[in-house]
Image (cartoon, rainbow, N blue to C red; front, side, top):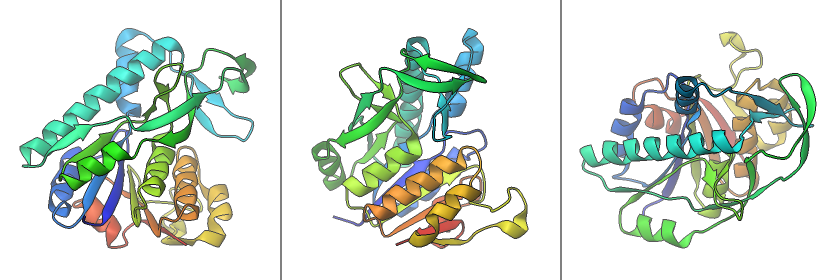
Length: 263
């Protein structure tokens, strides 16, 4: 089988999906591709259209995530299916076969103390989860048959589908498949010490420097750096956080445009 390349397509506004798909279609000649996608902008649009409030949770460690009530979880599932199908159709139009999969297994925290919109609350109805396992056999079967797995940020659990972080999901998948490289595309160039000051852009982070990189990261970038850390510590040789808005974004990241994390 070709070398496995895991690519996370960010779900934020601004990512150029057509450019990503064009580039991935070319890279499929040399790599067995696994695509993980985000859904944040699609969820925001659906919530706005339906009058559903968007709330955030801040964990005791300072990480923020969306407050996923049962109603919001249903929106997550709907948005995930829509984006997955969009990617399947996009690959099909470029002559490639792809299939949607939910191989991740997760665990829901049934009670957690967190900051919600500025107030400390005990949360019991959140359907976010922690990834605990992954079913690899269907993924390998698809890859061996030249089919691209498309994976949303969802994990199965006894409580139903859970919202999981897409960046950390891509790291878990890259580790589980023993991929050599993971590319995380976003709507920014990469990691900065002081965003958006271009003079503080960081081209390379060694494994021993990742704790410092977590301090530099702001907002959602913290999750991406955390995913990079987990991937590198789990045996992935190289992770690049790159810009999904530019021409040939995946190839550019592979060629060193972005912030590279190495073991």
